[in-house]
Each structure stands twice: as structure tokens, then as C-alpha cells.
Amino acid sequence: MGGVLLPFLLLALFSLHRFGFVSGLDSSQVSTLRLERIQKHLHKINKPPVFTIESPDGDIIDCVHKRKQPALDHPLLKNHKIQKVPPSMPAGMKTMKKEGGGGEEEEELTRDSKSNNTSKNAEVVLKGAWQMWHRNGTRCPRGTVPIRRSSVDDVLRAKSLFDFGKKKQQRKFGLAGRRADAPDVVSGNGHEHAIAYTGTSQEVYGARATINVWDPSIQVVNEFSLSQIWVLSGSFDGSDLNSIEAGWQVSPELYGDSRPRLFTYWTSDSYQATGCYNLLCAGFIQTNSRVAIGAAISPVSSYASNQYDITILIWKDPKKGNWWMGFGDNTLVGYWPAELFTHLADHATMVEWGGEVVNSRVNGEHTSTQMGSGHFAEDGFGKASYFRNLEIVDSDNSLTSAQGISTLAENTNCYNIKSSYNNEWGTHFYYGGPGRNPQCP
Image: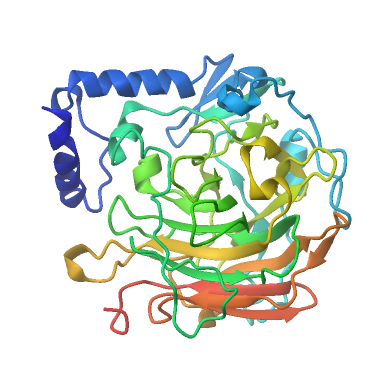
């Protein structure tokens, strides 16, 4: 079958398999030329492994020599020397590790202290979430980095080979009555948000927050639900927006299942041609052998029960200029080299924290894809999703509590957000919602 008809066939399959996520098309349904192009692309991003691990959830994790990872294929990074560790950590935090510490590290990441935050349910406990692929004790050897292997099926779920691993470009529109310095996030392709954000009048050099992890339901395979930090600079209404993003997401189209996964993203041209999710293109340089970007996070939070969360830190090394990512309390994952960016080569002008979903309006109705836990912000601790301990990195490379944040949700009958402050959680907010309901038709 010709490649021209493939998008229509995929659309039909998406509708037929609305709740059972398809694994792709077999080779008899795809043109030979298209398959050859897909295989060529996969050969470029799936580097030869030193060691391979099969995750309990079905993922294949390739342990690739760190100097053979996809990032170094980028033309701007041909002579790049991998930075092992940033010389200057943000002040006000524990020293972070280059490598994970196995069981000891996982124990450090588990917080068993009970929260006295606004919750009346004393049995609800906060704990740290980790990843599924090394639950059986198998680890990548030192000197390698774990990379989730991509398959033909993964590419076939995308709209096209060009779109594989990329966010769909968002066309921006203004929102009447909104502050002039608010982020222009309302898009023409159905993206909806519930976010907190800083103003644009300051220079920002990073951000951190702790986010509890859920497994929201997704209505159709080409929709997603994510919770992340955005570090931004450039113009929202132009083609030069720079963005660095990290958090967790559920994306059946990207991953082929409904598990929440650790993810990253970057772009230097408003999502047009540069950047991608995770390690699906050249760019992000991984330095850690124990954290697999794109791998499932486990365990996840449960309604009125244990809450599992992850801490994400993104900050600019003041000496080398690279943007580093931390995961958990003390683990460095890797960095986005300064060479990738224009505006972010200097500093960020805005940070956003919060949730995003795609609303494709199947049958003309609002999607029932959930944001966060699927519950509104007012349900509070143990029921609604949260971001806690929002912090920014200032020009002195110090972490400070985020002050004076604003919030934005396009349709509060579908998804909403409520921010607050206390001594334990600092600046924090609850957010999310069920999507379609009687007030959100």
C-alpha cells in the first residue's frame, strides 16, 4: 500500500483501537520504501549496545557507550567533550551524584515522612518513585548510558517519520483579559494547560519542583497527558522560542502503552524543526548509567493512598553554560549543551510548571483524557495532583522559593489549578481534572 494512504489507515486504526493501543502496522500494509526509510532512521538513533536489558514492562534498554550516544551526531557537537559533572551546583541543595548508587540510592530517594500539608488523611504517605527497568537488579555497566530502543511500531504510530518524537507545532493565540506577560500557551491544535508561571522581567537560570506521579487515562492514542517544567526564553509569537522541558507523561502514540514515563524535550525554534523527546534525536547528552529517559516510572500514586513523587531540577552551569537535569534528590542525568540554543545560551526569561493534555475533540466532544490524577485541584492532597516546593535558580546560582507566581487554565470546567504556600511545601499547587464532564461538554 502506498505511503500516501498510510495516514488514513492509521487514523482508522486509531479509531478502531480507541482503548486498546495498537502496536503498529505489519509490513504488508506499509510500502517498502517507507519501511526502508524507517529502518534507516532507527539505525541512526538505535546505537549498537554494549549490553541489553529487557525491562519487566517490555521495554528494551540498550546500554550504549557514552561516546556513541545519539547526541554527539549533532553537527554543532562534533567536537564536544562530554562534561562529566557541572563544577557549580546550585547553592541550597545537597551535592548531586554523577552515577546512581543502586539500592542505597533508591533508599535515599524514598521519603517515608508523613505530610501534614492540608491533608486530613494521616495514612497517606509520600514516597519517591523510581523506574521499572532495573527492578530485577540488572544495571548498565559504567561508561555506558541506558537508551530505550525504538521500534518500527513506535514510528508507525506517529503521523510521519518527520513527526516521530516531536511535539506538534503549536499555533499561538492571545487570551482576552490576560496579563500581557503571561505565557501564550493557547494553541490551535487542542493543547490545554493548567500551569503556574513566573513573570518575564527577571533573568532565570533554572527551576526545580517535586511532582507526584499518576497514570491518567487517555481517550485516544494520539492524545497525551503530561506534567512538566518548562524553562523558556525567546518570543511566544515568533519562531525563535527556546524551551527546555522535563517531567512525566503518558503518551500511547509515543510509547505504545499507558504507563507514566520520565521524559525530556527541547527546541530552539518554537517546535518547528529542532529538538525532540528524550534521545530520539541528537541533542541531550546523557551522563548517568542508572536513569533511562523515556522509561516507565514506578510505582505511581493512588487515590487516597500512598503518593509517589519525583523531583526534577533544570539549571544552567554558570561556568560551562550547559543546562543540566537532575532527577530525584541527588542524581544528575545529563545536560543540554549551550550550543543547541540561541536565547537560552544566555539565560531563561520564564519558567512554567504544570499539566498539559491534547484535546482532539473526537465526535465533537471534549476529550475525557485526564490531567494529573483526573481530579480537580480542590480535592487536595492524596486525590489531586500536585507540584510542591517550586524553586528557581537565580543569577547567583542559588535556589530560592518561587515567589509571585501566576496561574493559568484555559477551561476550568475541564482542568483547573489552585496555588498556595506553607512552610513545608513552600510555593505549591494542586491541578488537573477529568476532561469531559457535564460542565465540560
